[in-house]
Length: 272
Image 1 (tube, rainbow, N blue to C red):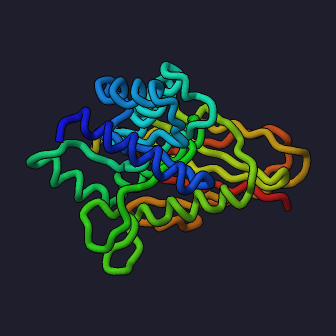
Image 2: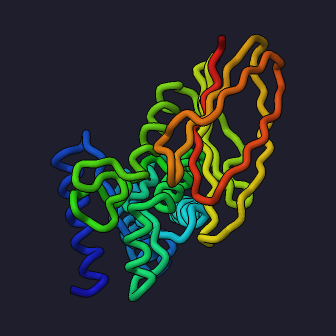
Image 3: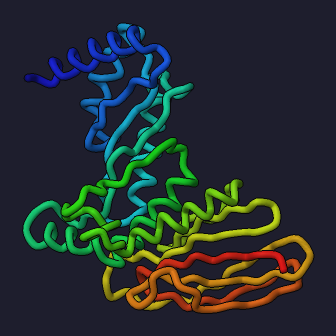
């Protein structure tokens, strides 16, 4: 059908489902990007005209680097503000993954890298930037067995991206998000605390495969007392394994960390 017929279908379905199940969140429409103003105008002017609610606005983002997710999410927020749906309507990135290009050698390269360390670094960077944005949910595409874009498992064995979810789970268990400069020239971080222990996901993602190593200076502030800092590394050789340990008693301290492109660190700071 036509674009207008799709909007007809969407609004009729939205109205009917919301009337049948008012307790459920009904939304959509899973656009390929939030930056399609043609479809945004068709959708939201109809929603406005018919005074229909939209519990969530969903869209996709396949990108060459995590910074592009920032653009798409912030644009989606502006769309909701433009049409008066910025109160109560969730932003959902319901498909995302690393894609260099959709055809030829770039597509086969993308499928290969989704299952390797580069894909895992992209996932970690995407998690870091998304936590700092107004996104309410994000859904990795995908975890179906045997598909080229599944960087989590292959033949029931964990791939590199699997360990990103373990790191993020541990941050979730700490409970409280600690805002940081989440993106600084290809360096992505996400931190959390329970008030006594701390955790950080950190990755270096430069889309160029031959990008040079970086030397990072990390500044930490913590309550007084003795603390242990553990560094768990995800790279070509390690699967989130302990590679370094340090002890600090001062409240403020600096750490210097040499990091290779696409490496992911799980840094844990615990009171002794």
